Image (tube, rainbow, N blue to C red; front, side, top):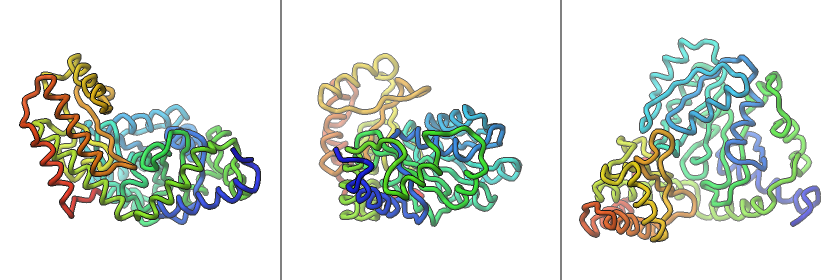
Length: 364
């Protein structure tokens, strides 16, 4: 440990801010809080939204719902643009909504929805929001650092991420970028805030310290993560995630399984959601999840309405080709042990072919 009010931390913090601006592809202010990603999202609502103010939440899954619920908890009048789970938001529909919702001042969008394995077409959605001159707040918790999200070029006013995703760290730190327009809104917003007060946080960071005690060990790790990411380069990081995601989609199909994100262009580069076979869904899903755990493989289960119906493979951050091979082999063995008919080796062959492809599709 070091003194978080001392010279060592005053040297570390600016280094992290510079690295994060590089990864966010922004010149906007960067704030760092000891919190989860939800804490970062709450900070955005607390600093931007006044009670009774009209807000539009674009939700394509559990975390989009959470963002909308959070805004309602702070007294916002929330209009929801809700899509069936497994689908992405349509820019034309958003354009139509904003044309009718003239009182909406702020739009909340989840870039990458981990509950469904779907990535929104954020560039097109952002263009619509900016054309209507509304403030854009993006949940980039599972995208920034893994999926291309050029904050400044796309006009994102607030972008939020968290340490445990593409940053390859334990949970406990949230990072967010804040535009000049967002700062102007913050100055007049009337929601209560203290722990997540942006102005207080900015003043403290300008002095080389944080308002509250920082998650020191995670910030040391973040310095190393940023070094690793700079060595690989953002374009290479984004392409690696695309190749790995394509490999898992190909392997799942070869196993005779159905993908939740049916359209490849909206399939997430950081998490793949796959329907369980009918014979292994519901209560029977517990058996296959246990078998996978016994084989050393931990996958995410379905959330909410998808509980017992899907499994989710997380593949962001420090995930490489050898991890794909080990995961696909365990997936196959677990399914076969539970009676699912398959062609041995077909999934691994499909995954390797996808990994060798030099031009995976890019989601924007």
